[in-house]
Length: 108
Image (cartoon, rainbow, N blue to C red; front, side, top):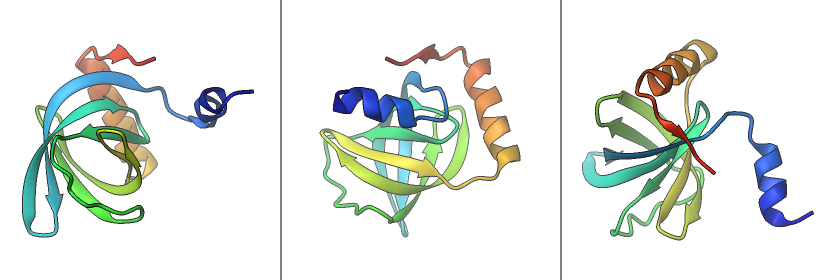
């Protein structure tokens, strides 16, 4: 079984492809980025700027037309970061409804 298959099997929430602007709040600083995909569990955030974030660091995301979400950095990606949302099941349900309302496409 390859690494990609293993990673896909660990997902508990369906991913949706997006291209939305997002302001990444790091402490008292706000930095622009793009949301590349989103699920009820987390998101991929992309930027040309290296924000020097570390796994376990808390950030907040202000997503265009969707809302404000607290998140934890999980790992660095080639062009950004993977984050896990800090939310309870009710908030997660609201986020999933918001994703579906926007008609966002399923990511590969």
